[in-house]
Length: 383
Image 1 (tube, rainbow, N blue to C red):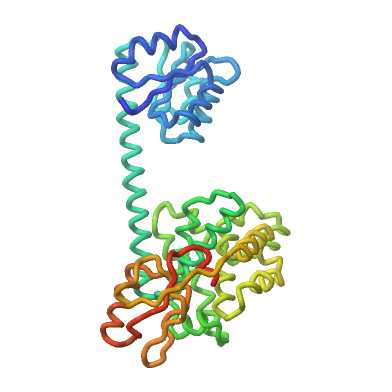
Image 2: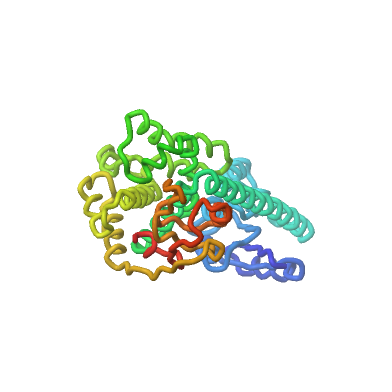
């Protein structure tokens, strides 16, 4: 009886009757009113099934179940009432998203059967959600691994930007959703369509022609179009689509709510990383970003400045390529044995990249040892 059922009624005798009749078959919990029940949702939830009386002082059953629908949408909601008129039934179904509407008095057999049906519905809903979540996470993981193989530089930047965005949010003590971590990776997918030569020039901070810059600027749009085909990534798409939106324009136009925090975090983190790539010392990067203050959220710049000031230089080690571990970070730019630039310092070692480096080393295309730092944290990201 791990799946809990919550009964809400302002009559103590009614609640006691539910416990007495149903406790041997169901995990029954009770609350004497809507406000108390909402508190239980936060403290003791989730509840698989929530059964509420209609007429209660303060917050009636429809109002309560409507709030439950917002706070705990997967709970199966049922309403019991002794005043089963058509209008209240329609209101309850429309606002509360009811699974079942029962009239009082309700005999024990009917109530038990309804609870069993409600639990079955809850299991179906949660099983589908779990399947979708696992499918979604698996899809994102595969896309990230493909990016790591096709374009290690873009994937390395994605990891650095992702990590820095999370660290800035932590300084502000601001929780952010999973969509920011996913957006940091998937925003780089569009760069698969950009010629490798253009990506290499951009990664090294070289000047681009107008056509090359247009190819680079189109990458986020391409990423949005690609991931738009994956269900349940609407919030990720919103974050990626607004990475290029200036902070001051969103504020002046009164559309600040349309500029997600994730977009602001990824923009400042990305531009910080780009300036480092161009050789600007880390102690000067934040000041460069402040030169165009309207582009960024000032609170995020302050948090970034705090991180930079508190960062300490990590120790580095020279290791054979075969000894590299996932999570280590390149401490110097990587060139092939023929002098071709391959990866810049700061790229994290991922499993696909590790395999690729081992293949290159075995073939003699890169040096047999590399200088790396470990573990990967913010201090490595801003060296």
